[in-house]
Length: 76
Image (cartoon, rainbow, N blue to C red; front, side, top):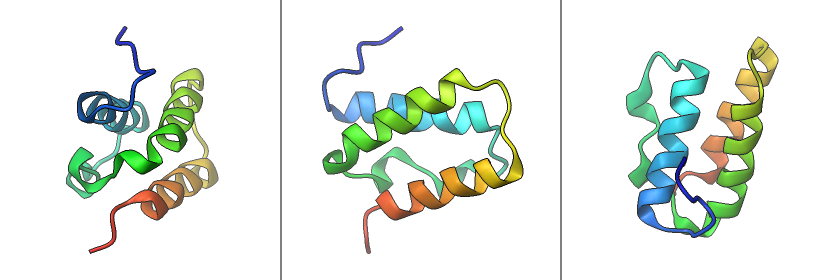
């Protein structure tokens, strides 16, 4: 397992890809690592760790996670 303690672009990509994989997101193009800034790294790492610990997610949990991620995306 990668050492995710350091906020690097590579670790950010690992976190985003891990969340997408665990949630089995159908449209993975909506969540790309480059859409997130390292300023949110700690929050993303917390979310990643939470997601990795759970085996399944309810619809409400999935919605909350996606909304949380949406709030951390870079603003265009």
